[in-house]
Image (cartoon, rainbow over all chains, first blue to last red; front, side, top):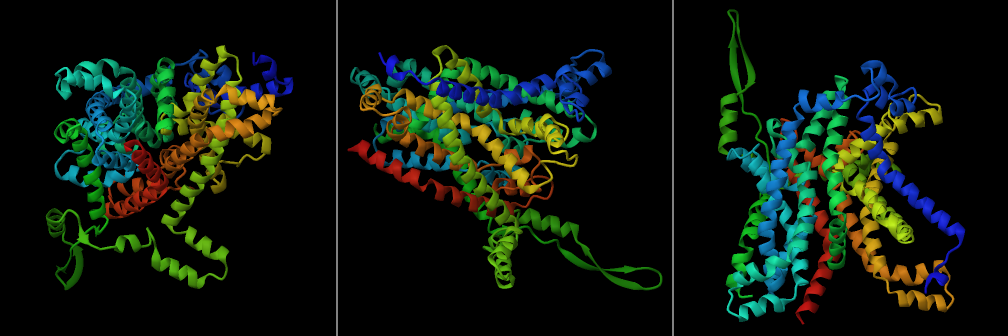
Length: 293
Length: 342
């Protein structure tokens, strides 16, 4: 019905489509370029003579006999033992997500169901904590952690990341629980459930969409963190992101930049699949935040 | 919910936040008032067969003991805040007295590390936020007009720059603008200048960081606007059409006012995000040309000589800055909460 009125001039359609295409190129171009280039040698990926070398792999063919090479990946994963960092990241991320969702769900539920003023003040404090750059807390951690020998362990990092995650998790789950009608758990309590039983039997079965969305963002926070992990972990048990950062200093002189490129591509792949499978949840998570402030 | 039950539910998360956020802030505040011990210097006599000489050396044992007894260092009150690496009150006074024009004064202040970082942080924040807002709106309008089948893949691709680890995202761009990378080499060719390096000049480094910021943040603004567009009531747009509004007028007078609250939200989020800019400076190895408050803290703490007092003072000033930026959000949350209670 609106089609008649909504029909637009050819020029506008052409303009808006070409703008979107341009945006898509800008958005994905750097990734495509780096993924493609990670299978080349340095002489191609950083080719001063002609950028097309990186597309066809001219130097790669000369050096390795084939247009594609796994040298970068072999160097990063085997020689530089990047797999250790991948394992460390998996450990840190898994436990951070599980623990912060568990305690965040309980807290978020309580905040959504309590009308007292102190609940509001907790939320306000969480909002301020959420806005602070994480690096500002680090000098507060280092001194006590050195004193008590807690520095450099993966578990310490998990605990710190869980805590740093809480403000966000609380806000997200708080606004999610507000949308679950009060009547549901309250009628269960009228029937004789305690508050915790009502939570266990009535709320938990319906809360998964919100929890999954929140979990995705907790995952991203832990996975993408550089400020905390680079400061709290010793060089033996670094996670991926600080390891890549420390690659840069050492690798450049040895002419092994391709190790870093391969490591970077390896670290992007999980994120790629995350977006592929959870696109809908990520979008809804970003917008819940928007609606609820 | 009764107080007792509330406490049981909130206890784990509240404990975590108090132990690892609230107490560290207190600890940072205390640390910022202290400064590292000076080394204990003692006078020793170095005697050789001919004569004895008095010399000054560091008493390693006593220094170690001092550090063990009082790991915080010695009390310095607000001295760290005022010194050259922070607010630099004395230096500013000197610059003020010596400079003959405003230009000279600004240049003098810019040479002080804290103000240099503050200047970049604010420039970055206040350039990226509005650009991201406008760009996101246009992308959202464009995607909204696409055929249904292409919307999903478009959103997928658009999400990538935002979801990627900031350090990794900046590295990817950094390698492309490297003197031998695709963009860097092409620019050298276009301008016919073999020494052209985006990393060597301060303005180009700033532009690079800002471009990265726009690339990284536009998806957020796009997604929020796009979701907002889905909720604009069709009836209002049709009513405007019937009244003879052109397409541009419909966007300007119907859609944009409807999206206004979202725009405020995006701007606030962008200001907060911009204020904490840090990873790109590491990724682009830009610290010689552009520093930010977060980067200064990182730099103080990284490596062997850990300047706890100095980092803590910068941290405190950053936290105060964030609270300042946050005031409008806090006021709005306060109003929302009170209306909800009524």
